[in-house]
Image (tube, rainbow, N blue to C red; front, side, top):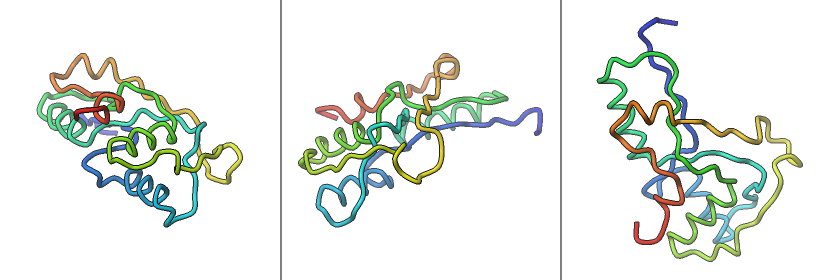
Length: 137
């Protein structure tokens, strides 16, 4: 690895209705696809605009090394789906649930990126999903 490189580790990227997860929530709520939102798959979603601002700031700062850029809220994919459905006026009770542990989907169940150290170096704020998907946003 180059000694002056920056590695930006992030989580689920959400925003403006265009992410894969947001589209899936709409499809599941409408019943147009089969699937489920896992209640045991934990991530720290980040808003695309917050992430973009943080990446630009890191790139222009001379920072090096590994930096976590994730939101402050650790949520299951189902909790995130419920927030998206509520924001978008969908009936969240139509969102099917499941356990990732019972599926064949590979990977870790709980991926909580601790972004506090990176956040202390930035002016940009990495909001949690409860904030950027909350009422009045």
